[in-house]
Image 1 (tube, rainbow, N blue to C red):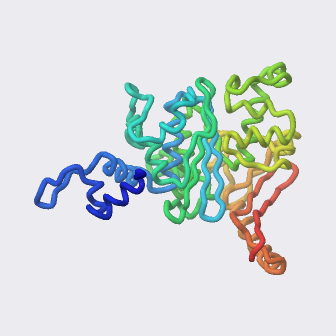
Image 2: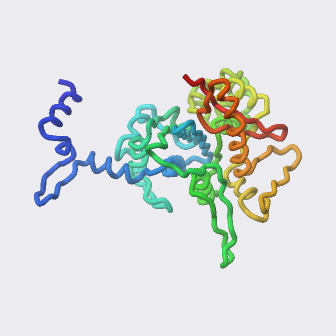
Image 3: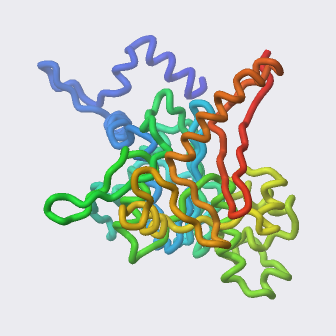
Length: 360
């Protein structure tokens, strides 16, 4: 009899509640099995996409990462989150085990921070319980880790407004207070500020993160290493895209990190048409304070030769306009959009990409 058949048999005879209870104490009280208590705790620990983001970032921080890259994208109800760091890495034998309850490498280094206790061995387990998929895409001891998580926002919610970038407001007692919806961007902004002297956080689409990883590798790897390559696991993951020999190789390496992008995007990154994004701390300094950001909705002046950074409200307005324009065209060609329009900008152009599929 297989394990599944045995479980079904016990359920039929005893009822499913029996599998959740270690002891019946009488008077309506029971002692839960450890597995059931852990499952219930996991459901409480993670209640939104934003909760998953902060746990992933804390995990990288505690692994000693100095550079963290968060790629996020939504298609329909599915939210994809990929964190790539240059922390201590995870041995291959532990890639699956880290998602089990009470598994941790922090036996003596658990810590309390503004988000609660970390180091209990429950964060990645809680993510895996609440996510559609969670996996280590790549990791080598001493060379960092790439973790990928996919969630269904129909069952695990998130803030409706994910495009608004946080701002700072001067309060009556002359202190600065962060304002804006507590979305993924604000979650990242709070983390970046809290750890600005410890690590740098970069946030964007998979294509933007691929471009930023490539730029880091180009700036820090020696010409000899880039020209002759290196064996897998000998170069930090955050620099490995700089070893790509051509767009197809770039796509293959990016996919191994959990970043899906087209060969065209890869070629544009290699050609310099898509450049790196600034760190979250730099974005906050540039965009979030009234003295530096535009007042009353006026666009911020761009310095010549600098990459264009669109304000979140402007990106949202472009997306809405694209949606209105696309509707009659899509109806004529029996098409439907399958996600938000991807808006990217350089100093030369604003590019809009709408993922579509054929209806019927």
